[in-house]
Image 1: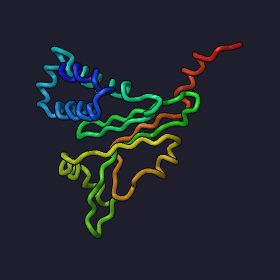
Image 2: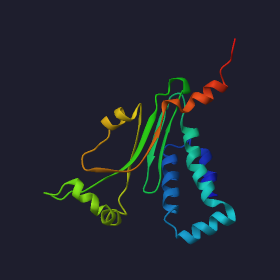
Image 3: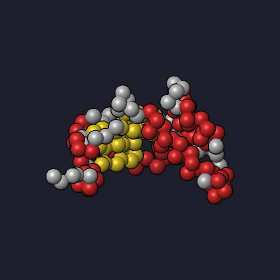
Length: 169
């Protein structure tokens, strides 16, 4: 509830959105059973996620076309999109891998489970690129990195939306 009370000041207090994202991220470190009880009793986890999502709607304006906030447990990327000119988007969560001299990344892939456990406290990096997948990969910081997750939004994602809002003359 504290986050819900603070969220209304995000557009007036510099860096408050960043602080709220950090608070929500730290709350995710609470014991899983306690989070489960809070969700069942008060929908606390759902409300916390909604508050973080709401930050984007408060911050995005004609002057601010995109925001990026990354904390230990939360990555928030938001963009102002015009459906008619949308060219697609790819978002990727990735992690730097510490390669040992003389070992290739291919051989290290077998060790990813161990490395993931070893690097559990390390932040993931998160990056979104507009355009097609090929142009997104050009901008991807590939040296010594492993993609953990990726989502691609195709250019046609808004086609149905545009068709519903087209006025025939």
